[in-house]
Amino acid sequence: MTPSAIRVAVAGARGKMGTTAIAALEAASDLSYVGGLVRTDPNAERSEFSDVDELLASARPEVLVDFTHFPDSKKIALACIASGVRPVIGTSGYVAEDVDDLRAACERETIGCVFVPNFGIGAVLMMKYAADAARHYDAVEIIEMHEAGKKDAPSGTSTATARRLAAARSAAPGRSFQRAPTSLMKMEGARGAELEGVGIHSLRLPGVVTHQEVLFGGDGETLRIVHDSTSRSSFMPGMFLAIRAARDLTKFVDWLESLL
Image (cartoon, rainbow, N blue to C red; front, side, top):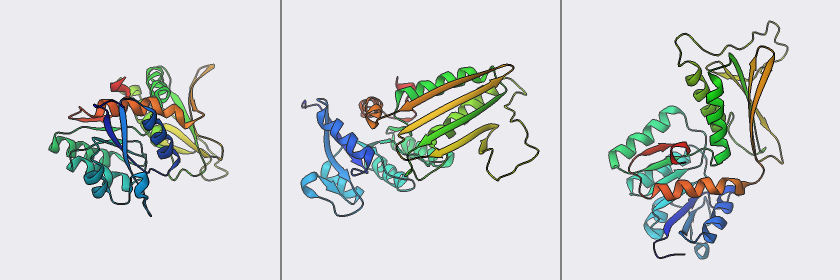
């Protein structure tokens, strides 16, 4: 660790992502793990806190990485912004209005925030390539898989992907995705969810980390763009990228692509 190392706290310090992140931070020479936020029974020897304000005052982080659940995540992020700490948010469950609230808080305090529901750099590229393809196809479906314990569905990555695909498709006037109609629905939910003409199917299975597949259908062909994370360590390069950018940010950043 260097004297100029970025001081980083982790919210959700005992979760699967939190413990992976802490181990990675402790091994990085230019980052310094200074404390974690937990729900109950904080261990002082592990620099744990159960109150976000106490964590911010005592550990004095410059950046806080959040791996909690919504709506707690939003409360933590707003507390950070008000205290001059840059949040890096790795939590899904936010809707557009919540993201707007964070953006407004950053503008009000002239402080940065990085909103990253998926730290996988491959996931960012998957979305970029899918958006490029969206201009050329009339139909698309998304299949996303996460571990059985994930609390929300569909995932933040899949909904963000669907919105981006729809925006790319509608760039030309009068163009939008069309889902094939089903005249006989034998079981409710068989076609999954739909967002702006994009079908989304959420699978929850033990043994899965993350998987997302974007399937385009055209005349006589299909195009599949797939991203898999088989280990949570795959998220650490993206997390590091967000942390290192966050310390000097004075604005809200939505997703990693603009930081690549």
